[in-house]
Figure 1 (tube, rainbow, N blue to C red):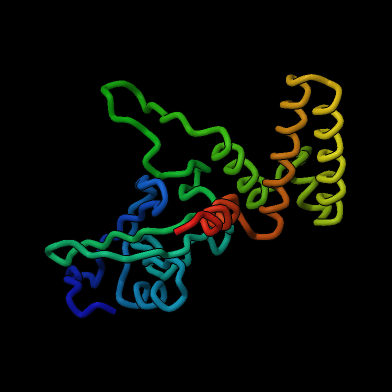
Figure 2: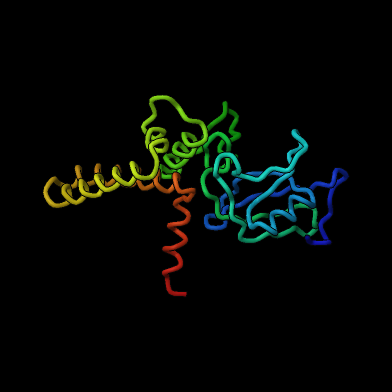
Length: 205
């Protein structure tokens, strides 16, 4: 723990969480000394809930954990910047960031979310809060063998479409394949960020 941290009268410090890859601000939470110590020890974010008055591990229930890349503190040492690689959306609403609304003089206005992030948020939501009749829930409940079976079928359909069915059909089948890949990642407790990290690792330094 950094001895310079200027804890407030409640023993807390605000922690701004930022996506280390995109620079997007994901959330604002609070840490006490123990939350910071656990964050440093585990490499994933821990916070102090002011409403429940208890420690909480981000993603412990939803699976949307945050791998810590770096922790900085400001010039007054009374605020932290936690740079992370998020595994799933940061917000409990399923949005990638808690700051998804714009204060523009009109009622709450949503910021447009990239399609892949939106789809991933839906998959994570179904994983955390199952819904009857949901195909995603059916796959997750059926388990990895069923997901792998569907993934194989979709891969074959992509190949067939690419060979003989034209680009519109090819794109449609490719979209189905991407969806099933995301479901498999969610079932294994992984995310697209893990794929991106592997791709980045392959680039020459």
